[in-house]
Amino acid sequence: MANVLVELSDSLASAAERAGQSTVMVNARRRIPATGIAFAADLILTADHVVERDDDIHVTLFDGTELGATVGGRDPGSDLAVLRLERAAAQAAEASSTPARIGQFALVLGRPSSEGLEASLGIISAINGPVRTPRGGLLERYLKTDAISYPGFSGGPTVAADGSILGLNTSGFSRGSSITIPVDFAWKTAEALAAHGHIRRGYLGIRSQPVEVAEDQQKTLRREQAMALLIVGVEKDSPAAKGGLMIGDILVGVGGAAVADHDELFAQLTGDMVGRSTPLEILRGGTVTTVAVVIGER
Amino acid sequence: MSNLNGIFTDGMDALAQQVLTSLVVVQQQPGRGLRRFFAGAGAGIIWEEDGLVLTNNHVIGRGSVTVILNDGRSFPAKTIAREADIDLALLEIPAGGLRPLRPAADKPRIGALVFAFGHPFGRRNTVTRGIVSAFAKARTRGGREIPILRTDVALAPGNSGGPMVNVLGELVGINAMIMGGDQSISIPVSVAREFTARVLESRHSARSPQGEPVEGPPGRPTGVI
Image (spheres, each protein chain N blue to C red):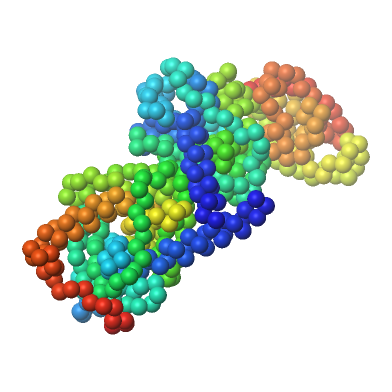
């Protein structure tokens, strides 16, 4: 019977060891170092908030090799940043092929000092989202674990029992507590950051507030839509201004998709829309009109 | 393996029953005056079957110490040696035939399961679980550098002096403190072995040439005192 415990203990230690090979120390601030995940042999994904300077950045690999690094890209909206190593010497992490499940084992790893890898054990406690982040990002999904994220753990991985990465941990969204950005979103962001240096987000230049859509207006729209966005401000020279949007317009749709609130508007203004003329559906003076707006960049 | 949870629970139960026989309560007797109100209790570990008990130095105060075994019998304890530097103390009780914990031969791995046994907040014979989080070093007041073991096992007042064991029930550390609310610190068993070996070595060489102890012979168990 003790065999089950021995097997479990050994497999947890092996999972930590395996993922530990792609878990690096990130020295990019005056305080204690933080952690990062090698996403490619020359690229480290970490939390944006732990990269407090743009130069004199050092990364230490699992075997003690210390390398210089430069900032490849940052996205404060999702609190992710990519560092480019001076040499392609890191061991790339393996992303989990199955999505996280509530109750599954979660090993939280960090490498905040030269003493080596550190770990804490918990389970996946919750899968939440979507949520808008304070710095203008949108997290479709995030994980919570009940493992302890020790100081310096931000930027490090939450690891499944087989040693594959479930996500990247960060305390950047709330003081003292850590959330896990799921690996599929983290990896996609890392690729975009490595390629473009930042995450492009679409931008209109309006201030708006939620408003009810009256029943007869819904009839005009020819669809059921209880809420929309009343434009209460248009920034000078913004894409919205250039397109002819006015205060008093009620924005009901973007690019063919209904928009009922700020979150939905935000979700529609993706990076690939930047520079593209997009039809915006509005209610103006009781009638439905379409205004073409060339989406700007946030 | 469909009943993995059940097998795990049975395994945990067996481990707990095994380790509990080596867990003791270490109780400070209240001192005089105001110190009357500061009597505390911590945990301790049967170190040798002939009555040696290991605990933290900070668990024993200046007054007399009582050790309560897991089977309920209690004994007055004599302090053989104590070192504030490494926060360890070796006690002796007049009891024999006890079940010591076996020290683990090797350092545990990061991520390995470990369990703390003790009496947190006075709740007797409580087990908490976690993994080995990190190996660190601490500099003692005497200037020595000793290894320390960090785990994410929940510890509380009353756990001090108690054992941190691995999945085989072997001793990997002596639970000493919590830092910052969630970093649990244990003195590695290697430090305890070195301490007890030193103490017993000098104790042995203090014996008379015939090999008899200078102190009185350990008595037979006399039950509750």
